Picture 1 (cartoon, rainbow, N blue to C red):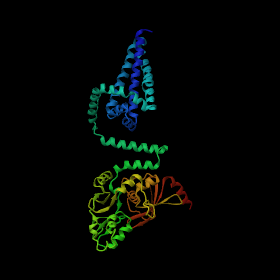
Picture 2 (picture 1 turned 90 degrees about the vertical axis):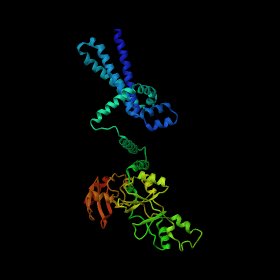
Picture 3 (picture 1 turned 180 degrees about the vertical axis):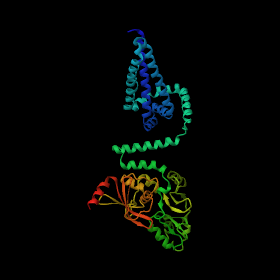
Length: 435
């Protein structure tokens, strides 16, 4: 075996090692947990800090890894072909291609990537410093390549302004991870609902979480003081909207604690008391306002109560800070409520009688269903939307794997529905047929 061949073999082995370095680095740094790295940096790890800086510009990082890996793989194949061409004759290209394909696949791709996946954190921390040097050296070339790539993509109408897309992808990734961990048993259902509830806030509007005007307790300020006091105490609310002349003319909000404070220490306090002095200015918000925006507004105004209006200024309902918290933690019934807030009653045959005004999001959370809630907020609204009409009592519908039967209707409002979930649909159908 001549000296040139020996040197070539060692050179090829070295180049394959370099290629393995690039392949393993790319896999480790793209698979490493950002949250874990940020925590390790906070705890004082310099390698974790380097990884966070590298990952913050993934396009530059991946570009440097691909550039180095591509260059090394082409170089090793060319070197092997040049040295072995004279020794293997006309079949050199075929033989060298076959050998180098196997060698690159095993030693420069599969082996380092498998190791990086099996020991992601350890590999990433160990390679953080050399990768930082490589990215710094290849940075100018990578930057030129990036500009060229985006220039080509713009010819096809693809822009680099994708911050919103990236944000959506991050939310979807978190949501998918939570559901996967719940399915594996690592995350409890309550924890899953809370995490996804926080993620859903950015997609919700005030109209999705408000208390509708039909369920809203309000008081006529023109009544006698004793009657107003009785109604406020009977409402068991901390804040009650008050109106004058007509229910849509909301003039303010009466706080129960102000009413009690006015009466403390003076049994005759309510006689001749002007209720207008206790009423605070109402705050109106549009039903299309985002829930996240409303939460920020509550914080800045140091308030947690607002009246909701539509585009014409008509009262649609009210919204409180507790309504937003319910979206995250689930509805917590008040100790004075005669029954749970969710209008759902299980039946012996596996079906459910559900109030038409029950929010779809509450049903999905309580029953682990997946009914869509993009178009309408309540279950009755969903049925009307899908039926394209206001159904009569006794009419049945089937969509999204569920069966719906209208049980009660009041004027144009569906008040009670019988719902059959997908897992019970066949059994209930068989029972009804036999009966």
